[in-house]
Amino acid sequence: MELKNEEYEYAGFWIRVGASIIDMILLIVIIMPIMFIVYGEEQIFYSDKIILGSVDFLLNYIFPFFATIIFWIYKSATPGKMMLHLKVVDEETGNKLTIGQSIGRYFAYIISIIPLLIGFIWVAWDKKKQSWHDKLAKSVVIRKKNRVDKVEFK
Image (tube, rainbow, N blue to C red; front, side, top):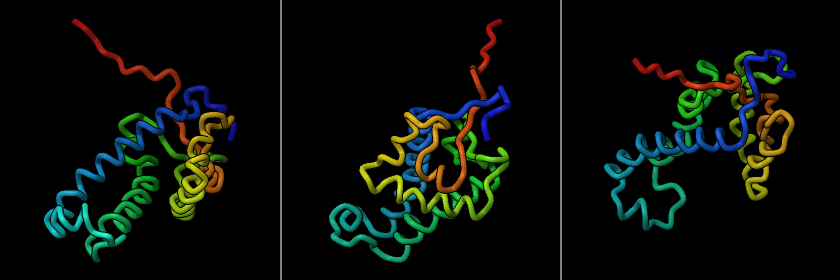
């Protein structure tokens, strides 16, 4: 889809980085207190284990997967993207992602990460501002053009 709707534009690299940072902070705020309660500081910071146990696996792998997929399907955005007024949509139709696209996009993050994060950095010079996981899932991240929050002074 070439953005024919002049109300929207493709979201660039830095605003997407900002949305990701917001999402990471929210996940940390939710997950870390539970991890401290269940495993304690000693195990969290000094253990050689990749996965500390079932609670760790559920909180750090399963929860983010399902939360992200659910947000993409129902809101077309994660909380960080919503805060920055971004949407993840189908590249061809501009509609919400399907379940298959959402799952594919999530796992395609691995392809974007592995070669020194090049798949994420690709957004900086791609015509549609797509990362590799966007290209694989046939998705784009858009935002309202020239968006300025209005502040009224009286």
